[in-house]
Image (cartoon, rainbow, N blue to C red; front, top):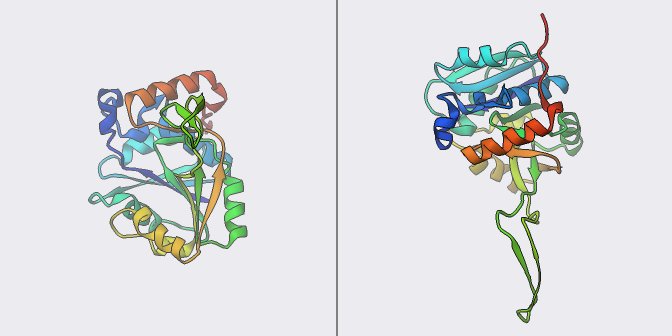
Length: 235
């Protein structure tokens, strides 16, 4: 089984905390950020990960992510293609047919990939996106219609669902990815309009790492959850 990993992020918002590395290779808890994802993919049966990265960074990804249990096949984009274009470019290197997992290499989620693929198959959708609820960055005031304040809630989960950037993509969805640009502004809205897009609810961990503050939060989480530590395979 194969997976597509988007890894073209520049880590601009991380600044010096990125140590000059592509964002998916920034260390968190002693391991490259993307290593946690690749380890989870391997545990779900993935044997080959096609990494869409910036041209010239291919060797860095092989060196950093090799030995986890999956073949790492980096494809350097000849020019910035956007997320949708990057996925399409990476998908051109596939050897297998059928649904494929696709996800960002700079986020941490404990998605059940096996359950995701099973629900994707059951739904018959062209693509299935993993959706999650996020917490409000602000405290919330409970307000009645007449203006009475009845209470306060600190950082509650919001009712809306957010696209977490993890997908199961069928052949139709892959064929409709843009050659350049963002699939979330083209392919997915089109599929949704045709009733061909499915959502897989995720209630577990979702840690984004965009800023030094996010990085510190991820470091703290990993120090408290050693079970996340990847185990490298011995040849």
